[in-house]
Figure 1 (cartoon, helix red, strand yellow):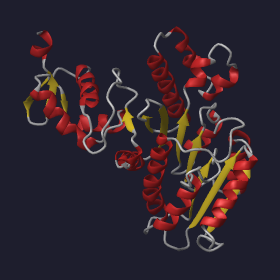
Figure 2 (figure 1 turned 120 degrees about the vertical axis):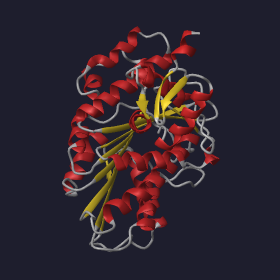
Figure 3 (figure 1 turned 180 degrees about the vertical axis):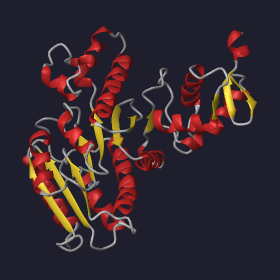
Length: 362
């Protein structure tokens, strides 16, 4: 939220889309962890910048969405659901408590299976002690760390989350403060990237797009160094061209697959498109019902350019698409068919593709 701004505030379009992603992912996350024969004894959903729980138009905030997703998808059982919401604005804390009380007048689940904490304080100083007090460690944690363009969470917290059993993070990354204040930011900014000052190379870059891509690349490396095996970062763009970057970290392939499913199912009513930060041209927004495949085509061509002369098999390209782009593996065949129809790739045997050297030479 804006510093010293009113509470609550108007919901931005890409915030609506972001919350739709959260809702769809939580509706998958809770049943996977707390349902069935392999259920964990408990799971914790935590937010480091929780907000007031409501917007001016009465749309619910992410904490309300999280509680509702849990109620919709997790039947009452012995599994314990823990939720922690932290915000550094006392007005937001008071509003959120009121929203949770009025929207859920009956306590969600029994006292033995639902534990809730709403705390005032910064994410850096308050969230980790709250997780300690809630005895959340040792069981899955999904931490949503919405920085609202401020300096993101500490590397130490990311590392602890990455090494905690079946835990994941969703981080809203604000690149603009780093771009605007690179010359004045001290060691604290380097600490965000695990102490690596490589992000400061944006000082030598001419375009804003190149600077944003570099910061995202550095932050991906930070999460990788912290211990997250699989990463997904993407850019939400509204009709005015305003961007919001989300970075997802997990150690489970299934988590990555489910997050991509959630991303590509977002309701179009928000008027928000998606962009892959690795697409150098960055000119195409994704249409959710009929995805624009040109960005994926460029990424696949780059991948094939670096491949052996014999080319890559479809399964390799599916894996690349899953782990290195915002697209889903099911987008690959259609994209390859378009590239081959345009003479950009060739297939010497079924399922094996390479760059078309004849077309490149021309």
